[in-house]
Length: 334
Image (cartoon, rainbow, N blue to C red; front, side, top):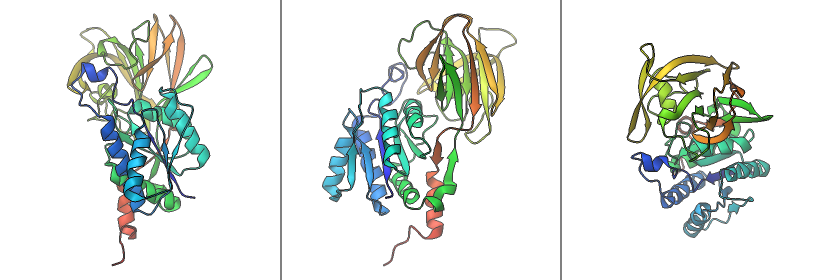
């Protein structure tokens, strides 16, 4: 049976970057309203089988309760996983939806949430909607139209499958375990994790990017100010930052809401698909994946970062709705 899964992260957009920048607040109440708009769009196309993650913040439960009250729709179901309030909850939820056989997953969150979902979604395509602090990977599509597009794809995957595109990822092997990032892997000049979010550009040693699209915030904006790369271009970017020097290039970038920083670039290199970047830590360093510190590199530890075209597939919402209009799928009988 055709179905759509939905995962919302109640913690997205609530890290330290909200305190050090002029970021607006994306409240949980607004996320609930967004979830209800998503479900309204799905239902309007005639797909009633919706599976909503019952997160610990109760976003899913409150949204489903409101939607059932308005629509009397018994086919909207909550599902649960062994949740702990951590990022891994989104990965577990994606794994569960893959087991349940949904045809696409709508994600509410930022880059970190999308990365967590990508770890568990298998080959199921995503519609990532921005509710995080840094949103280089997800889109600001309105929830209603995102739901409509998801329903069209779930009901007719062969027809709308051409509007699905596989994304790039960065991979690194750590202690025999592979880790990945959808947007950036940053090497931070720290000897401890501290706050997980990366916000101080002065502490960034180097950064690998899958994309550097102008108009986005976060570490990818450093690359956008030097060598713009869009999500479909089959290359990435490697930046090495450093202290002041006459030979350095200096870039000015919007790294956060209201935060414009300048950074000296010692070197930069365009990275091809399948190409590997080698890095040896001169001292203790911290690795951050899509803006969140997760791994401590020891002094002289060597790592290899590889760019691959094996990330999650993304559904293009405007393209799906355009095709639906051309096919007449948005027309109704009088």
